[in-house]
Image (cartoon, rainbow, N blue to C red; front, side, top):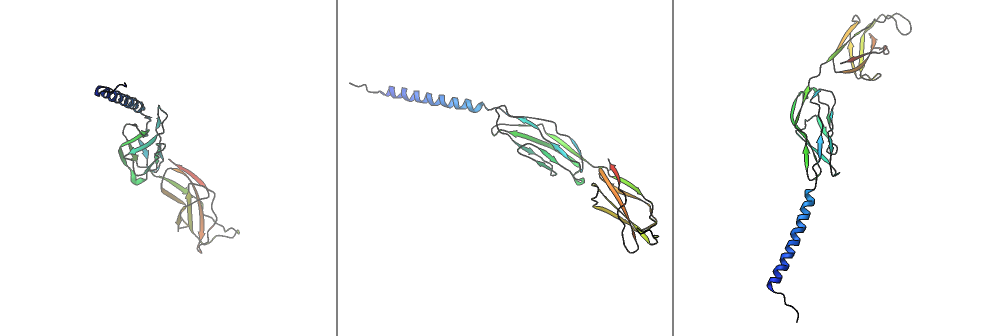
Length: 213
């Protein structure tokens, strides 16, 4: 005669199933908890001069080899941030002179995250330079005849030789020295022309260069 399960047998069976489910949950929990927190490190420059390039990319890694993404808090408006690499860069303008506090860059593997210590960036005003140019007034036209109607000069300048987006006219032929002010740091090339009373302008002079620190 086959055995008939008692209530006690059913309780034991349910208890065994419950134990198996609990054991499976425990194993799953252990696998989730095995994820390692990513690492991030680096030292961001704390000072930048206006109109100068600023750039910082933190170092980061994950012990498990997980893909990483980056985020930033309190990013200055003049800067750009790459969420894939953590690259933080930009060029502040003269109107951005200030101190930007509590900037935090973080890295995440999708489960855990880590952050650099909060840092500040101070944008300092840039000092403007000047260039003093002198020349000798022309006395002849290109055909060798005497120049009798010299009316003035034009000075052109830019940061690339042959490309002169800036200019100034000097409508006094007696002036032979001119100071160009408010030059940001960089290397400049200057050329000059002369023009007569009819507005006919000569070709460029030989270039002069200056580096403003």
